[in-house]
Every structure is written in structure tokens, then in C-alpha cells.
Image 1 (cartoon, rainbow, N blue to C red):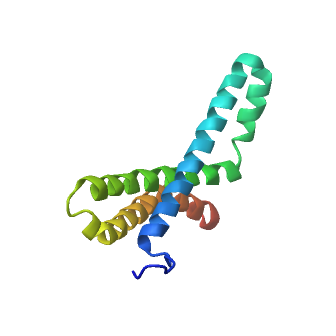
Image 2 (cartoon, rainbow, N blue to C red):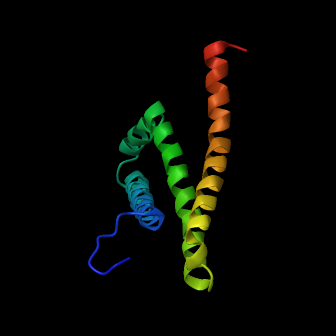
Length: 126
């Protein structure tokens, strides 16, 4: 790329952004998890109320988001390691990214399959 031009955002930039976003989401989950677990020592009744709020469809959806974030972050982290420590890594970083995305999609479909199957049975009866 010629000197003085702006980086226009290719796969490397978007994988960097996705890696940072998923890292922040995982950190946020861990932070909330530590806080709500610590609440059991302060007020067991309030802890029970907080845990009861977790048994909602919205939180179930957020849990799948957490699975998606952890899975992508882990797979992309392996790709980053390969790019950094394998002499041919930078040359194949784009192919490795699309491999990571493909594996992530297959695993997420596998993770959602039981939920979608259960939802279909509830809606259409079986």
C-alpha cells in the first residue's frame, strides 16, 4: 500500500475488531459473574432474586451470544498465534480467517440445533 493512504479495512482489520469486541464481551460476562456470585455472601435473598432473573428467554439468548463470543475468540486466538509464530502465517492469514469463520459457523449451528429442534417441536407439535 502506498505511503500516506488510509487502511480501508480488509479481513485482518475486521478480525482484529471482532477479536477485541468478543474479548470485551467475555470480560463483561466474567465481571458480572463475579459480582453476582459475590452477592451470595452479602445477601442470599438478593442473590436468589438475581439468579431468578437469569431464567428468562432473553438471558438464554444472551448465553448463546456468550458461547458465540467465546468460540470465535478462541478460534481466532489460535489463528493469531499461527500468524505470529509460524513463518508462513502472515501469508496465509486470510485463508486461516475464513477457515476459522467456517468452523465457527458449523459449531454454532451445532450448538443451536437442539434449541431450534425443540422450538420447532413446540410450535408444530410432534
